[in-house]
Length: 160
Image (cartoon, rainbow, N blue to C red; front, top):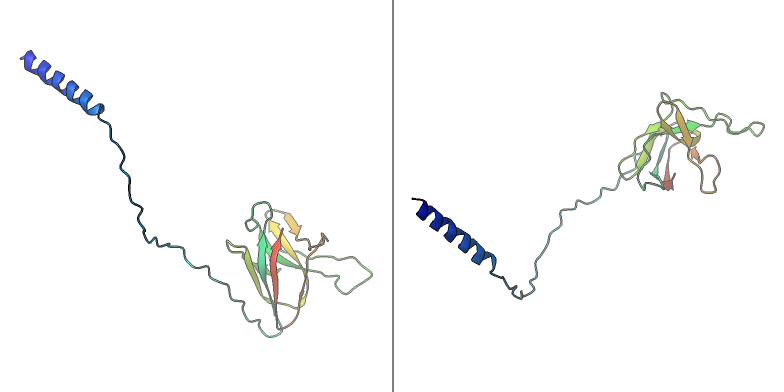
């Protein structure tokens, strides 16, 4: 009985060796045109809200220069409580509980709605106590935001 098993095993090995020696030659293929559809969704353009009576709206985009993404912090407007006084330097009042706050989307878009008129500094806050003011284009310590009643202020694209 061992003889047929040896024969079958030998036959299997021979077939395996023969099949592994076969080479496949590539054939030339004719180029074909194929319509490829993309599934990318259109980017929605945010609409600026209408301010409430006597209030203002402040919108724009904020991107971190190092990461090319929105900052990983909460965005606030800090009122300049010394605005209009030449005898004292700028003084910001920051409270994460009461200051106007805006959420940023994945493109860095933000919009403060129904803001009381006044002069503010754009402020980033990271808990528990990291407060950073956004600088203006000339490198000044604060990017001043002057909110007028019944107005919509487009800050454009800002970088941190």
